[in-house]
Amino acid sequence: MSTAARWASARSVLAVRLDGMGDLLMTTPALRALKEAAPHRRVVLLASPAGAALGRLLPFVDEVLPFAAPWMKQPGAGDSATRTAGLIDAIRGRFDAAVIFTVFSQSALPAATALMLADVPLRAAHCRENPYDLLTDWVSERDLDVHAGVRHEVQRQLDLVAALGAAPADTRLQLAVPDAARTAIAARLAALGLLPATPFLVVHPGATAPSRRYPVELLREAVTTLARDDGWRIVVAGGDDDRVAAESLAAAAPSVVSLAGALDLAEVAALLERADVVVANNSLAAHLAAAVGTPVCDLYALTNPQHTPWGVAHRVLNHDVECRYCFKSVCPERHHRCLAAVAPQEVVRAVRELAPASRRTSPPPPAPAGGASLSLAA
Image 1 (cartoon, rainbow, N blue to C red):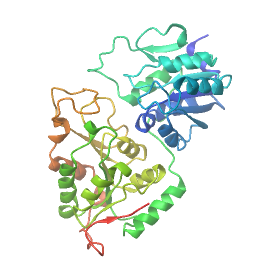
Image 2 (cartoon, rainbow, N blue to C red):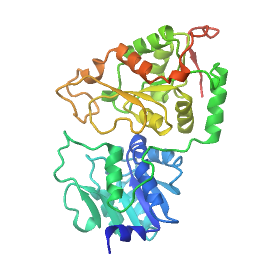
Image 3 (cartoon, rainbow, N blue to C red):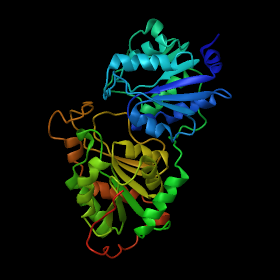
Image 4 (cartoon, rainbow, N blue to C red):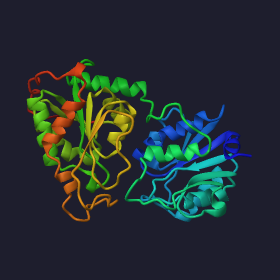
């Protein structure tokens, strides 16, 4: 029996994606392909605790199982062996097949071992070394040069499921923005004078790794020009860790406000959906913007080559350096030139190129009462 025929008979499939939310978003076309490949198929997502929050917004995922894997970057608390044994017991006998999705620098074999011990009959993944019986189906990456020719993360996962006979009709990123989140964001924006016809930008200064953050003082220069010279209304988004940077940006001009730390994940997605353009680092925000169809200016640190925006109008900004593709969370050369050498005017120019012609900016409004910066608490 062919590989495609064996996998077509699988009615309950476990999709394993145990890293970050951005990585999970870039897997959504492949997940959709798995769901669509067989009638009445049930797809269950095994995700990191962070990824599980996003997984609940994916319309082609029937159930989400959170698991902090001890072989991942953030292994979670507690006894790793006990937690892994609990996972094996929880999934034993539930699934006909499982697909392990990893970035190219991760090994699929720890997850494959757990799946084999849980008696999952079909197990597929990318793998550089021969997995022998740990995987029943594998796409070899043995000869891959990780510094050149690396496929985009979306394409890499599409290639994996294609080898199993699954191909989606639509390869765009996707998530379902809840109506409640749209309503909540509409109310927040209306309170700021941002009605549905009002053009505005979203600027997101955060990223999980310091090496992927554009210097906030340079971003503030760009925000100042976009607000004061181009007349943009600007909303700064981010998590709790981004509050300080967001407040600095919000002080750049009267028409800039901060919602950093005030929104949950679904509301951030709804906010990006409403925006005309999103300015972000290589982070979840850039992929969320792509998933909701909003053009994105991506301040893309040259730490790796395969995570640029997918399926949406975008500009990728960086400065070429000899140390490109270091795969480091902190700049090993300590100069951060791949981002620090990007001039604020380049950000301004990218936004001008991406702004929809039908929704050009208007003069900035008067300053909010009480000062130049407005921050809304949760």
